[in-house]
Amino acid sequence: MPFEVRILGCSSGTPTSTRHTSAQIVNLLGRFFLIDCGEGTQIQLRRYGVKIQKIEYICISHLHGDHYLGLMGLLSTMSLLNRKKELIIFVPKGLDQIINLHLKLSYSKLSFEIKMIFLKGSKMIKIFEDEAFELFSFGLKHSIPCWGFKLVEKKRSKRILKSVINQYDMSFSDIKSIKLGMDFITKHNKVIPNDLLTQNSYQPRSYVYCSDTMYFDKLVDYVKDVDLLYHESTFHSEMSKKARTTFHSTAKDAGRVAFEGNVKQLLLGHFSPRYKELNVLKLDAQSLFKNTLIVNEGDIYKIKKTFK
Amino acid sequence: MPFEVRILGCSSGTPTSTRHTSAQIVNLLGRFFLIDCGEGTQIQLRRYGVKIQKIEYICISHLHGDHYLGLMGLLSTMSLLNRKKELIIFVPKGLDQIINLHLKLSYSKLSFEIKMIFLKGSKMIKIFEDEAFELFSFGLKHSIPCWGFKLVEKKRSKRILKSVINQYDMSFSDIKSIKLGMDFITKHNKVIPNDLLTQNSYQPRSYVYCSDTMYFDKLVDYVKDVDLLYHESTFHSEMSKKARTTFHSTAKDAGRVAFEGNVKQLLLGHFSPRYKELNVLKLDAQSLFKNTLIVNEGDIYKIKKTFK
Image 1 (cartoon, each protein chain N blue to C red):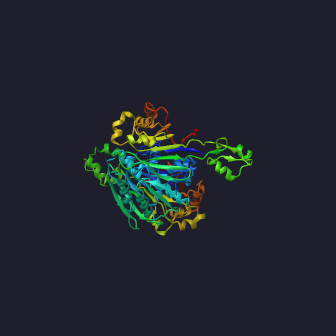
Image 2 (spheres, rainbow over the protein chains, first blue to last red):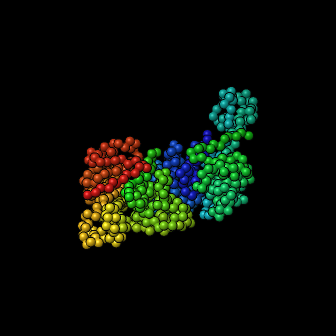
Image 3 (cartoon, each protein chain N blue to C red):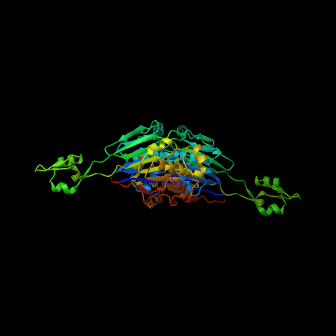
């Protein structure tokens, strides 16, 4: 089962002729999360064949237009397609007012319910979970209230070896207890240790989304040891002064966060429209953190499984 | 000097893989009007090389999302590009609340002033003019308050023949009075009749935009004798019942308006996403009005000059 990120937009502030504003789809074990929703996101979803109704969760980092102006159109299209399933959205306070005003002025009602969970505080807190994953938010340091998101798989139960099921003619309840770590007792009262019947599942995978923010020490804790980090890199480090005054990061800042946080892979995004050629930003980050990629719209970045 | 319409979007309700929601740019003698502004309009403007800062006027027909959800992003980009020139927008009441709420929640201020002129009433009224054109609005018949727009050139003064300027060694004040219809008196007191010195300018050109609306008798008066009519044609006449219940037009309705209104050319737009192949809609309208075109995004439709 996949844990992967598809980039729909990676431009900062305004779209360019080759880049859209922020949006990405995370597929976590078949659950679809839309993170940020810049203008044109629904068009990008269509372009890349992502089924709009599959989206269950939407996370909006902050209320700068390049991160949420596609939301109303997306909700409206979901409704036109007669969605019935509840949509859960994690948003800064205020987005409820925007949605309600749009609906009021268009004399409209959505065909489905929205469960709105408001982001708050600066600490990392769990804001949602189901049996397979946990979702956290944490405060970023931007010119207006802004949050990052962390998605983590839960540890999966042990996998039972197919060969032993037949060998010992096991029942469903046998299999269930073995998965929980119990030993197995055969008909002849022989105890088979759990280790001989099972193998560990892969290590839980994790992903962090950080946009928009300037560098701050605490951020390193939030991204600690994650498999994949998407981090904004609006500017090259040559423009670090501009980055600071606008509460943004340079590519080198992103590299620093990835290095200090010991993440496995870094994705750079949220590029200023001034950069036509993005390799300079990659090199800037790689001066501190080698395993860095420049995201490309439409591309999918998979998090691989690893076993201990 | 041109009077032409470039289509940026012609999809009804929601974008499709090949069509964007409503937006078009009218170039009237170098003045740029944006009529409706669906999601992604700023991206379309960039795609077709229309300079965003050249837009002086924006007309929004009504507050269904497919006609205005691109506006906030466009205003924001104009501001990021540090526009200083005032922007005049003609909008339904309520859009001011939306703009103000977006700005408040993003702690932003635009770099330029907006002069907002609210649409009102159902009759055709002049809402703006300068020395070269007049802009009118008129009420349409839709499920929410909705207006159409009419742009008309003013009658231009007579054109003086270049040959006579040299022949009689005319001064600027001579030329000015001849353009106003006066005769010319030579140094030898010979009277040259104005008709021998001038030719009439071309006939004032006109354009009407009608979206969204169902058919109603009065509409025919509003489009009377115009050179070019853009009319919504959400459905084929086979779906006339659906058209009526949703307060929309069929292609045949559009053909009827064009025929009864004696317009010169009809452009069909605002197509339901159910129509992949649009020729059926063209044929539907042509059963009543031959000179009909299906609009194509990116294409420019020019209004030709005619002389009496």
